[in-house]
Length: 325
Image: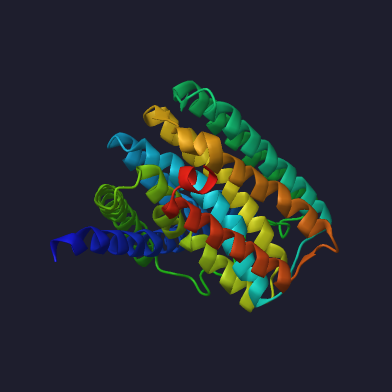
């Protein structure tokens, strides 16, 4: 029974993270609606940052507890899962289309952020200076997105689906405040349980913290994005799926890693440098021709993405060195 406790912590932590982030976003959006803040600003700040909150809290907590492998693995693994798992699952439900101009703009930003992440990773660690630069670039990205949104109209939120987070009616201020505070507590407790459980599981299985971060933790913290994609696919809002995923990947790199590095230095493990960052880069690069070929990602391509992700997870637990030796 004792051996099951870390797994219980992991599962409870994931539930608290996902549910807490959801209610935090809903409460914050309701408060913003009361204050008559522009939907564009809400989408680019509260919603976008909120869906990356699980990754942020887990990474900061892991770095502070001396488990940098979980922090780096979470970001790299989440970005891989966002493309191969989440977009693949969405394409399996229905073919995914994208506005060509929006896709080209957003994909260039994502590829640029990915290249920056890899370049800094090869210095050996993310430190306060690199973190500050990344956070500065995040604010530049938010400003750019705001200007583009105002230029093309406030409905031009290619990265954000507001339908699932904006309240259908006016929520009372007290209820909104309870959602925000309760969400914050749930996310904090969930991160504590998740990091503790994942670290214990890694030691018990004899695998590295990086592997746990790249797989279990990454999938768990990507649940808000997966829920958004499933909802968008069910409503055939497929143009939002790719934008949401690319926006999440940009936030993960610039925001999550940037903030984490300003809190504590985050060294990068050898396996991640030798293998995983290149899988992350390859997934980002391959998405471009897939989407530009007819501007649609079909079910066959979605199945291929899921198969690749399954193979990637299998390689992690078999061992990268064993597979490629």
